[in-house]
Length: 198
Image (cartoon, rainbow, N blue to C red; front, side, top):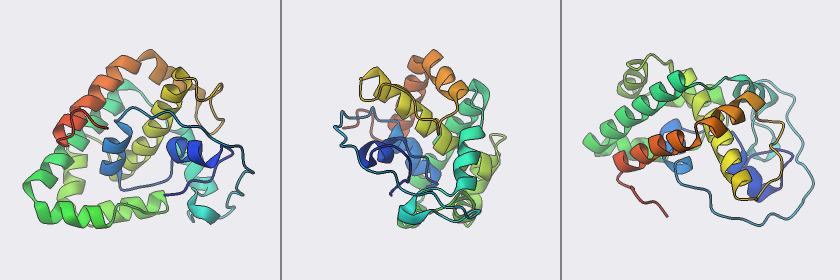
């Protein structure tokens, strides 16, 4: 999936918070980021429409704002991890459901990600059993992915400053809880049968 941000494209693909079917985001960003060398390129224009993906597959202004303004805390992240584990178990127990979800893993907006997820009542029920709404889950996916990857890339020296698309309080939360969050993501890799990751 392409994301439209002010960052170079290779970096944007890691830090972008485009809406995707959330269970796949959880497993994908749980793996440590690999070093990358990004070449500066012109920024992509953002969409001015509401709830419509920007040209090039980036999030709309409304989606980008929703991701940025969502406040992460250990309570909602813990619920997110529990919901993801429940979803992974559903997929392990139901190969047909797993195949269906794999075929719909890429969606352009938060609204469409929510609608896609809610096509599967058992998936919505797994999310809601943790106290999150489906929309909360989708937004946490993008927000947590963006903040975690940004902190990881800064630690590796791949970026010098955090992008303005990420709320400072969220990167501060990730920095403070970096080891704990990595341990939580490891449990997701284990649940997905990918303990080590590439």
